[in-house]
Image (cartoon, rainbow, N blue to C red):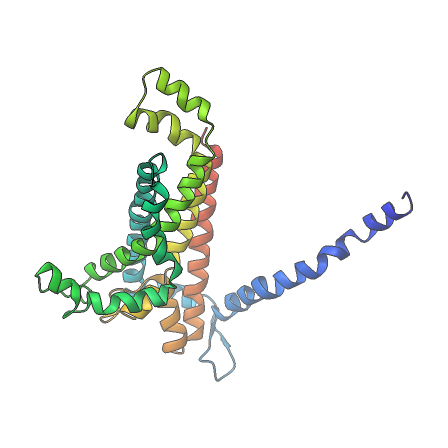
Length: 283
């Protein structure tokens, strides 16, 4: 036993080396290559030509990027209000009632669809001569005018994400000890007061996880936008992820597209860091 213990300690880094190399190869190496391409002019055919920070300087003068940044912010705010907020509401309303699990089932079903599949389902509904206009009795181009098209796609996103957020909040509710709630009820707390001062603070750890996941997902929204509008008409419904894809693979400007990718990575990482830091520092 005493002979094997030093052997295990001596080779401990060798045990994790394969996994570490795999992660480095699949995650860090592509990012470093992308960062390098962002400093070059590269069309995918000729060798990359070093141009320094010109691609990043171009970011500040690109009207398409400004539009996609605005739309991405709409996605972030809308995700916090709709899928997360409504998910919490449905979870609270259905948690402690008879048949609450069956009440949540319809909200869970859309999550089984992929983003692309979800967009294909909603495309004929939101088209100019689609079902939505017929049912509402209006003549609205839901996917043709900005920012209405972004809001319409955000509602589609909400339809898909509402169920999983509801499920996560229900798990959080089930993990809350019964004693504080019963004590609060004995003291006369009920309804909003009970939720605001007892249930909500106890759910804070899970809420931080749900909001963090929703924040990252909204910043890199791509599939729903691409299938429904491809960022159009023109480029008025693009998100940062769609702008990155179009500049890279449609326009074959790999250098500039890589710069957009680096910016999106930095924004996502910074937003996640600031959010998590705030959660840790908040008492």
